[in-house]
Length: 249
Image 1 (cartoon, rainbow, N blue to C red):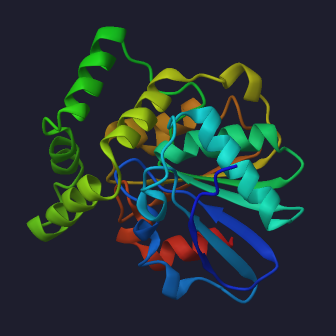
Image 2 (tube, rainbow, N blue to C red; image 1 turned 30 degrees about the horizontal axis):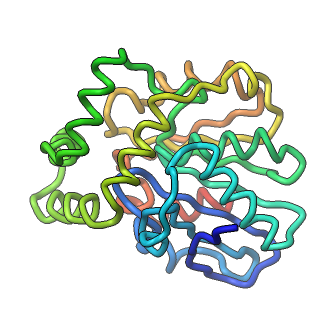
């Protein structure tokens, strides 16, 4: 069994497993670390296959594999309870794990999330998008520009550089196809796990609070939605003190 790599912070009895998004790796959370309670909590910042600390680990880069790797990690940690944090792309993985490990996952924290339906797109549009990613035809630049209108070029260049360098092209293609092709919404309908969604006021429209609430409330009866008033898609970077405090809650 392949063991994916991670950064461990803290020595607390409460285990929090933190997963990254499509255009970043575990370093997305670096600005939050100084404000985390590392006495009561232990934070495990994971990198999926093809990303960050696991960049050299090859795989199929799909939902089943990512969930298997995470479940294997949870078993290796030898803990009875975990709190799962997923950001954007990995929010889909977190939801599937919560479905598979309902007894162990005590809290599901989803940041600027993708619903359990995945993102719906016509087949030809999906193939064109994946082809543009494969050929590096400016998709990352377009996303950064559209999501970073409030910020200066230093921020934009930082986000572009990280997105290009954090992972392999194969991993980018696989995980994008993952959230464009999977739908387990019928299976997860009514999941009782305590679920908190964190969104940013200045994120892209698809991640705005009202839209996300409509997407998630039917699936998660124990749902709470928190809106960060000064963030877009990256509340952990844009508002690290707020984000750390919200995780503890």
